[in-house]
Length: 541
Image (cartoon, rainbow, N blue to C red; front, side, top):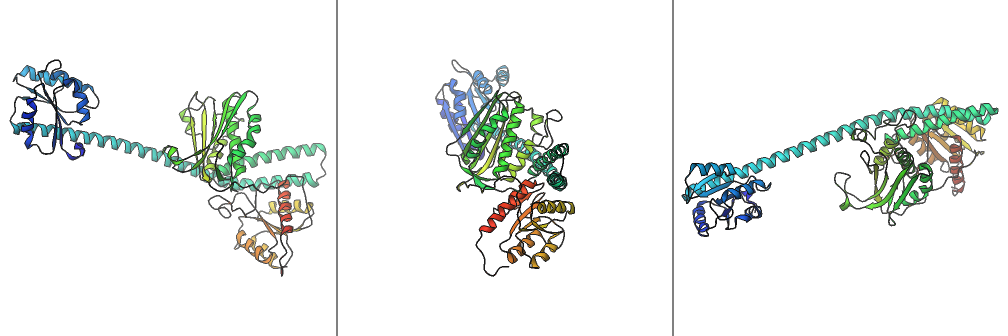
C-alpha cells in the first residue's frame, strides 16, 4: 500500500551505530502505521530513500567518511529526494552546529536521544507536511494538465465550428454555382452541336467551355470540403488504385523528382469513392511537386494499421488502411500548418493555386468516415496521412461506363427540372440527339405525365425541386407505373435527399451538375441498354 495515499510513515534511519535502530524503533512504538528501514551505509542514502519511498529521513550527524551534512546535501541534490524531510540526530546541543545543519538543508534537529513523545510528534509532523505538499503539487500538475486539455479541446471545437461554418457557406455557393455553370455549359455545347460554327467561333466556344470545366472542378472541390459531395462508395483495395496511378504520379512530378511507392502486399480493402480518392491523391502529388520545386522524393506508402499501433492523439482507435503521401519539400511553419485545410488559403503566388487541394482532401476523408493528419516543419518536408476504415468485404469491380462520342436514340425521356433555362437547354440537347423528349417544371407535373399512361423509357429528374411532390415520391410512382423505366437523378449536390451521411446507395444513379453532354448521353445510353436487358414484365404498360 502506498504510504503517500494512506498517510503512514516510511522512515529511513542512517547511523553508524547499530543500537540506534533499537532505540529509534522503541521510541516510534507510539507512531502508528509506520515502517522503519535502517542502514549504516551513508553512501546508500539516496538509493534507499528512493527504494522505500521515504517520507522522513533520520540521519546521524557524526559518521565516518560521510557525515550527516553531506548525506543531507546529497538528498537535496537528487530530484526524486529533494523534498524528503531530513531530521538531524546529534549528541551536541550547539547553536552553530544546528545552524550548519539547517544550512545544509535539514528540516529539523534532535539531540540524542529524544523523548519518544517528542520523536513521534516531530516525525508525524514532517511526514504529514511532506505528504500534504506532494498532494498539493500533484493537484497543481493535474490542474495544469486539465487546463491544457481544456484549451486543446476549445481550440479543436473552435476549429471544427469554423470549418463547419465555412463548409455551409461553400456548400450553398457551390450548389447555386453548379446551376449557373449548367446553363452556360449546356448552351455552349448546344451551340457547338447545332450552331454551324466556323473555325473561329468553334475555338471561342471551346475556350469558354474550358472555363466552365475549371469552374466545375472548383465547385466540386468546394463541395468536397463542405462534405456535401455525394459519394458513390464501393469496396476497393487502395493498392490497386495506387499502382494504376503510379505512372501518372511520375508524369505529374516530372523527370527530376523521385517517386517511391511502398504498398503492403497484404493491404486491406476500404469502402470509399474511388474517383474521389483518385482526385485527392492526385492533388496531394501536385502539392508535393510544388513544395519540392520539381525535384526531391515523393514517398507514397499504404499499409494496414491495427488499434494497438495508433497514437491516441492522432486518430481514434480502430482498424484502418493508411495511405501516406510524404515529400522532401521546404515544409510549413506552424502558422501555415494551422490553416492548411482552410479553403482558398494558399501560400502560392496569385494565379498558381486555388488553395482547395488540402481542403478537398479534408472534406472527402471526413465524409468517408476516416481521419486525415498533416505533419510538417520548415526544412523537414510534409506528410499527409489518410486513415480510412478497413473493410473485411472483398473489393468489388465497379461497373464500367464506356466513354465515347455523343450517342442518341429514339426512346422517350421525361426531363424534370425547375430551373427553366437548365431544362430548356437539356431538352434541346436530347432532342438534337434524336430522343423524344417530355418536360415538366416540377415533380407534381411529372407525376401527372407518368399517370397519364404515356410510354416513358427514362426519367431524368433534378433532386431538389419546389412543390408538394418530391423527387423521391416521383421515383416511387415511376417504379410503380413504369417498372421498366430507368431513373437518372441530377443535382448541384444531393443535400441529404439521396445521400445518407453524404453517401449514395449503390442502386442510385446520379449525374452531378454541371454535366457535359458527352457524360449525359453516355449515362443515358448505358441505362437504356440495361433497360433493354431487363426481363419483360407481364401486364405492364
